[in-house]
Image (tube, rainbow, N blue to C red; front, side, top):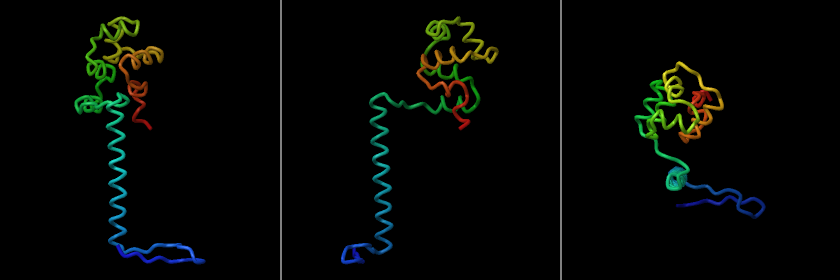
Amino acid sequence: MKTQIIRKDGKPEYAVIPYCDYLQLIENAEMLADIRDFDSARKALASGEEELIPAEVVDRLLDGDNPVRVWREFRSLTAVELANACGVTAAAISQIESGKRKPSVALLKKIARTLNVDLDTLSGTENDR
C-alpha cells in the first residue's frame, strides 16, 4: 500500500492512499464488525441471554395466530399447566387464546413471565414501533 502523508505545521495531518486500498480497508472494517457481532450473538446464545426461535413459530405469529397459544405450544406447556402457573383456570387460558377474552395487564404479565417472553410480544405492540 503506497501512502502519501500530508503534513501541517510539521505534523502528519492526512494520509492519502489509492482508492482500491481504501475500498479494501472499508471491506476489512465491515468484516471485523460482522465477526464481532457474530461472536457477541454466539456468546448471548451460549449464556441463555438469547434463544433461537424456529421459523415455524415466527411464521405462526406473522400469520396472526394468537401469541399466547404460539408461545405456550413452543414452550411445550398445556393450557392447564400455563393456567396453574398463572393462577387462573384452563378455561380462562382457552378463552384468551381463542380471542373470546382479553386478559388484564396483570394476567398478561404473569403469562409473559411464565412463557419467558416480553410483555410486548404477547400484547401485539412489539411490531408497532
